[in-house]
Length: 359
Figure 1 (cartoon, helix red, strand yellow):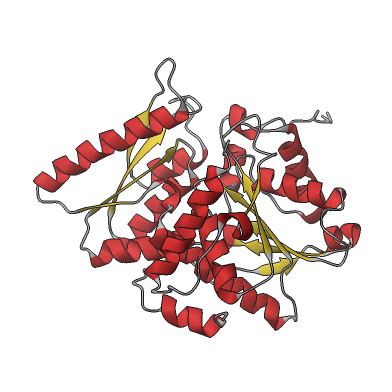
Figure 2 (cartoon, helix red, strand yellow):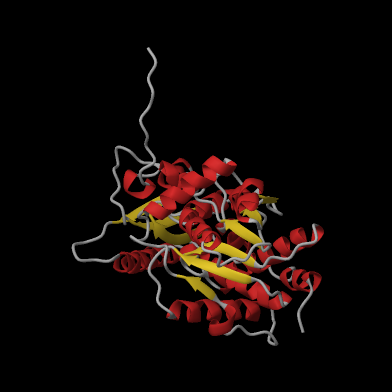
């Protein structure tokens, strides 16, 4: 038996939260693209989630994670990511809002030029985070660097704990059961907004990396008994076990709510789009570059080359090839991260065009 939005909100209200964002985030129709593709295409603007201009999807997760950190009387918060990590920057923002001290371990997938610090890494510095850069050794993969960063963080956390400081650990991407509750709530919020205009989503497209957003959206959809397909677009290489892990995370999120009568099956309750992450994480693709430019030219909205640009490229492909039928109601979940357009050239991609000089 499906749960109502009010019933899900009542379950969520039992969990500790720390107010960080400005919710509900806007949901608005992309009129020009809707007319071009004969669908009703809406954008869920989690890039507007606050608390500053550089919001994003992690804010939803961090409300629950920081709620627990504050409740546990933490003084320091640890988290991880790549050097231009949206999650790490938003965690630093959340810590500053809550009066906690952020410590971040960032893997240098793209080498850092200390004479030209940019984008999220610059914001981390402005906010005074304790920043540890994990440089990849010869032969190391990104996963190797991440594992080494987590080991270094564990040692630093132990050091602080032994000095009498309480530490709280947030996994990469905020991807645990508690963090995923933010997107159970996000799904309820979107459902209420669509219901107010007499709509229900047929498709939702979003970028997925660590599966926390994917798990929360899938858990929310399952709780409400919606017939929506949530298309999770990979931004880094993932095999089919990724869906299994995402469904397990979604079920763990339901456990956090005390829900035992709803379970997700990875085969029937998750949808994974694996064809748009190349050439790799934090590496722009021609398709995403075209998608970013196309959306900006048609609607005046920016998405980023690492996450949302690749997800939007997938959506455009589905629209152009007819995989999404005419008349469908489609939501693109803007997860933020447009700061990456100001990152290193290896991340941004080629948007340069010849300037016209007038003397």
